[in-house]
Image (cartoon, rainbow, N blue to C red):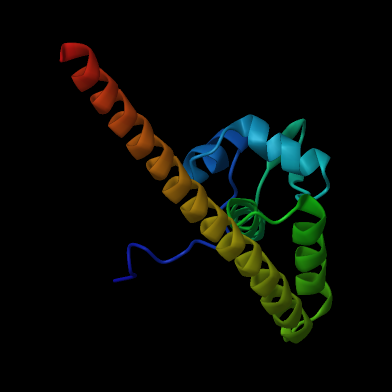
Amino acid sequence: MPAMDAPNHSKLYSVTELAEDLGITPRTLRFYEDKNLLNPQRAGNARVYTHRDRGRMILILRGKRLGFSLSEIREWLDLYESDPDQLEQMRILVGKADARLAVLRQQREDIDATIDELEDIIGAAERHLASAGNAKQA
């Protein structure tokens, strides 16, 4: 008996089916098609997406979620096509991921510093308000 979660590599998806499967809108799929990151087949006037298109879309969504630009995602996907061993793709991915991680770590440090400063401001303002309230009551 085949595993229920086994991928069906021959399955074709309509725009609506693939969008629902990935939790996105059909407009999102069309956007990435317009940007030439997806190239679905046609069945008459309808777009049909393959298992490969689904995989590309998963990579695109991951790249966007991680903060990569469309050009960086395109470069990465193009390398996937031209390098069967995916070695160059992985080298570039590591470099881009390292750079993105450095930016996020710096942003986290900046956010932590801003939070600390805001907490100090709030504390000083609350102390001032408390002492001003005590002075008026006396």
